[in-house]
Length: 300
Image: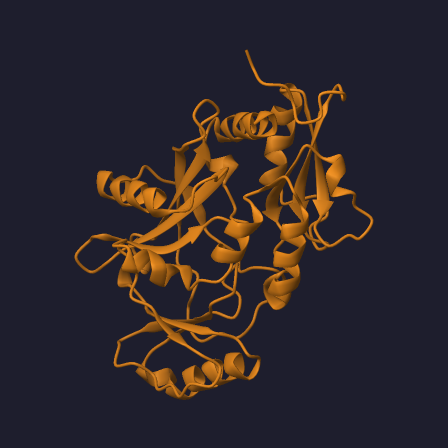
């Protein structure tokens, strides 16, 4: 027998699909979960995270989807997350995962992470002796404020880091892996099993290359992505599962982003637990699977 909804006195459960003011009706891909939720007796409502008129206690669950404007005010976003009792993924995960220093923790725990150097706002930095490398802020999403550099772009790289430091932002430096331009990036999607709550593999996609050179800015909330379905390799699935085992517990969803190193071994670029695109359009049945995970979380 299924457990009752969180608000058993209401005939239809209500779920807030959390977004931002620039996307008040959600991204098209996220709208694909509305009908499956309705078929399971759940009303899914797009809600802007920083709208002061919202009564978050009126929802049985709030599910983070596209609050992609939080990067410049992360402290405010984390404080908001802590104010929403039934948030998934929960506020503690949001605080941990919105600062990419979590990669250092995962690497220290044995996860195969792309080598990453962090540069603080007051630290001296010189470009590394690498053919190509990536500069981006530790608090970021959608590849904003991110650029690709080589020896010919020394001045631009120094300027990029200086700009981030002047804004008080922690900077990340990573090698640019050549496989990005050929094999592409693999994103593995995981949803909580409705019966056990354990994260279970759902589907995967391939991302094409996004960084063509130094950061020149972008209009909007994110850089455009080239997305296609992908059948992951056994090695990718093994690394993905290892990362999931190392991740915090209590997750409704996760996305594991991987890139092969020069020897073909999958390396973790990011573990997305806050507001990742879930690419329902490219995973047959994935919207229905995620809807079932949400219903189980409501009932928990």
